[in-house]
Length: 283
Image (cartoon, helix red, strand yellow):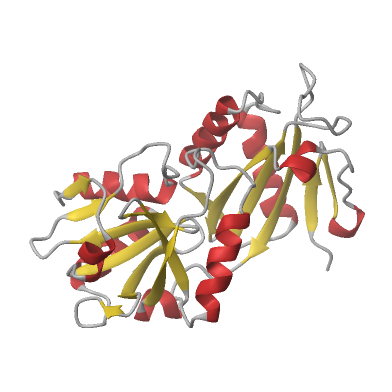
């Protein structure tokens, strides 16, 4: 059965979808995107994702192509038309189409596309056993707080990490961890504090990170927003990463150093359970 996608105002079969040659997202990476998790047919933390989409567009002076309510309707239409139970719904907004020029015309018509991907989000091997992450220098541009489609640095880092036998990679700049290549990095200290980077232009504000932070505050768990070094991470009691497509995933090895006893720790397990409970997933 052909997947149904959304392109510039229409739901069409994926083989019929067309994007213009002069779309600035294609030519310059002049576009932003969002990915929302779908569990049992329901979007998770979507209010945070749409708020971040609108912020990213605002930072690039691209107007929102539809109202938030209409964008949600597009997402729901994609989920329904593809009978998606578990997976993600992807949105991408480009500045629009114009002949190739670094300078763009005023009042361009932004272009919205969207599609779904079926994916197992709960009970994965990575969530159960934890993963090993590589450490690499951060190769990306300065404005990482904007969720642009310019992901070549992340692609190269992930590919290099896989070639070295790691599942993922955490990026390092000026002696501290910035974030994962497609996730937010967290560590848990031996006295039970959860450390993660504060919002800045150096990192993308993670929606799953924010949702988890709210849960921690509600349950009296201590969160400290500050940078940490690779050495601190390797010597931490526990480590984990968060993202819309992997939820809360334990990290049991960082570079050549095993974290803790090499197994997902009790605090990470608690955070996994709290997040799934908040998402309405039965225990």
